[in-house]
Length: 446
Image (cartoon, rainbow, N blue to C red):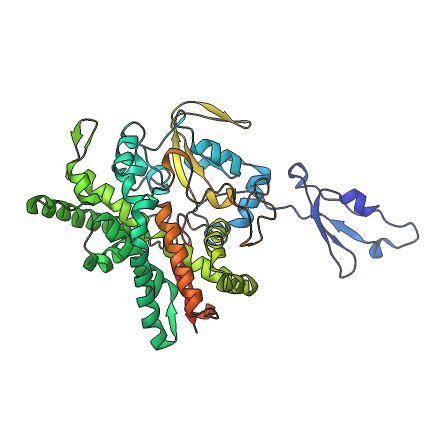
């Protein structure tokens, strides 16, 4: 009888020293009652039944709870409030796959021109500068069409030997010590050099690029979002890239790369000014060097936690590309990107009004059981016909083929050379941030 009374409610039922939990509907969160007392038992010995309210659903991307482990909150958002209102910022957040997928392709009701990060549209501490991901059609279409050839699978085929050589060199150095930090000694070294090659930044300045990007993304406890130090790092990066652009023009460089393309291209009938060139180049450097190391470190973690699947990948490298994508689905570093509403619209039963920011919670969408069977299980054999880890629509990640190639080659070389690596979690460090989560350090030994 008690079980029937408690169906679909959250409660802690105390009888002696035992307890069990059920789900409480939001409308009943303050309900409290006592179990009926048996007539032949004294009141002092009757089993007592008390309901403990489930915590009220609250999502704040800057909260410690979300920055340390967002997935429990994401799960509740999907089920209880898939279109969630963030009152403090007069903003909305989408957590279900289909909603994020559809909104990502909607250029009629949303704009990127007012910014796509929390620093642009929530805390508003960062000025919106001209970047490919902060542009709307038709200007966005014109620029993306011009640079797309540098990121095509055909153009990147010649890059694979370079990536493999870089990975081999990193592993050779690590072999002398019998250990390495997956982030600093391996993935970051490779990704920033690949970003430099693709963009046209001198390879010898790769370490400087890494330093500036890491400072840009650093966060401080108790400080919501981007720090003054991060803004300073962005200014230094812009200054470097303006000087690079000037030097190329003075030298009359004929190199076929993105730096020279931006020096020459006209968007909307006008050449780009220095600030715009630096801003676009910064996006390519940041996007190319910052996210991949976190994705790769997550893959190293997940494969170590699932040794049978790691062994399968080592035996059959053909499984590695899908394993890389499954890791990116299961643990996506970028927590959200934003749009701003330009025309009133309805999403489910909510009305979104012009000027309100909208957050796409990609990691939540990638764990939506409506899209993925057993979404909280890491499975390298999973069929993944749709994925939001590279975005979708007009603003999907332009570097997705670079990332896939880096992931394939780096995992192949790691599992070929050190298939039985061991994690050193006592020395690992995680980043606690609102925007891009992952490891700051992930040491392994072999």
